[in-house]
Image (tube, rainbow, N blue to C red):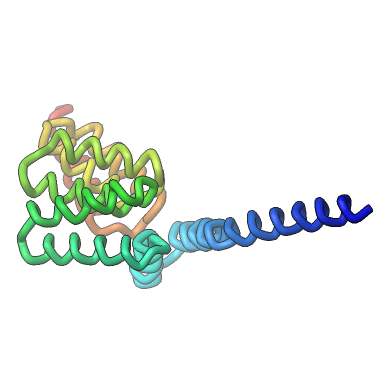
Length: 186
């Protein structure tokens, strides 16, 4: 009988630990789902606030050390030092391979260094891990435009508007590209 009680305690402890560990991730996912739903229905002013909340949620790794690497990478970018930013973001990617913001920051850094191939690889990783990452989608659309793939870029901007209907970069680019492509069709 004592063996059954001990086994029961182990099973209960395991269930408690597994659900306790997964609850923050589940809560964050639920919060993001809710924020994305609100974003798709918000007016322009509210949309900016919600987009900011979504981005803030994306930027929380759950680890002070990883958050520090992210902050240092972002500071290096702001200071016009993309080469140093790459180092910080690469360390972040190495230590937290499922944290999309490391890849997104490194993609931005690579892009600023003129390294389009590595930037596109990191954007691909971001979008594989977070298909609703409208900032990464915007970066990809910009690269597609630069590569002369205006129709593909336009489709991507429209996808961004499905997620974030008031995205200023996507609205501007959609209008511009529609005019451009309409002119080519004539």
